[in-house]
Amino acid sequence: MLNQKELESKVRHIEVHSRKAVLEMLAGEYRSSFKGMGIEFEDVREYQHGDDVRSIDWNVTARTGKPHVKTFMEERELTLYFLIDISKSGEFGSGEHSKREVVTRIFALLAFAASHNHDNVGLILFANGVEQHIPPRKGKNHVMRMIDLMLSHQTQTTGTDIAGALHHLNQVRSRRCVTFLFSDFFDSNYANALRDTAHAHDLSCIAISDPRESVLPAGGMIELCDSETGALRTIDCRDPKLRQRLNEKSLQRESSLIDICHEAKADLLNISTEDDYLYQIIRFLKERNNRSADVL
Image (cartoon, rainbow, N blue to C red; front, side, top):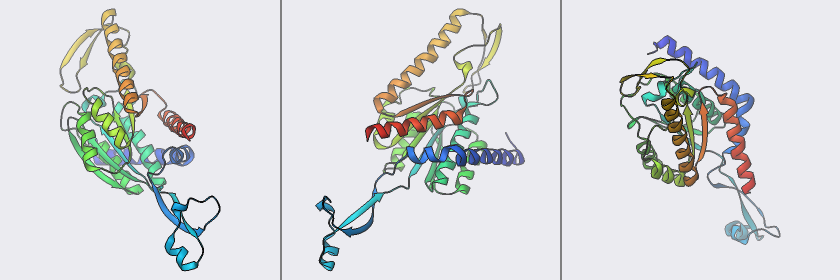
């Protein structure tokens, strides 16, 4: 566990890195990718040929003696909710960063992009139940507080309940919002909850993985520790059947998640701890923006 000085240093490092990336590369893609959730009244002007008669402002028309119509603009202010799986499997990392560290950095990028755009950001941390819930607010200090919480929070439960976290969001947030679900998806029985949430909100699933979860290292005997239960197991990395089973299980989990998200019409991004996550996020936002343009 980090002491206070180490924690403050890490938060500051993430802030500096994230804000620089946001200002240089991410802010424009973010703004283009996430549209407002409605329209709001902007002004009135004189009626012009071709205007929709349903937009006539009868009070102004009566007062001026000339037909006037209401004009509207997109309600640009957004609310973003981040649902982040902090179960103990996220502590695994075979390289420089654990899955949870990568998630924290991606969260910081997107949260600072939202803050830069004057949007509201909320956070739900969950494992086998919701452990922290920070309601949406604006501002840099709010984002910093959430980063601090993600770095310092000690998971209180074992296991993962994605469906429970999604149900919690739907209970506390009835109005449509942009939602990011971060998890390694070592869970089952969440398809219905994910579909319901994607129907109610603009949902994107960010699946975080580590290469060693699908491919064992070359070599002989190694000892594995179950991050959820602490149980130890010794395996032989040279066993071809074991290597094949691990790879097949990983592919099956990935394929299942793709099918679930496709059926729910939720966006999906797979990120490995070895990936350039900034590049992956920007590409993801570009693809969202391109799909929106194609629809229009």
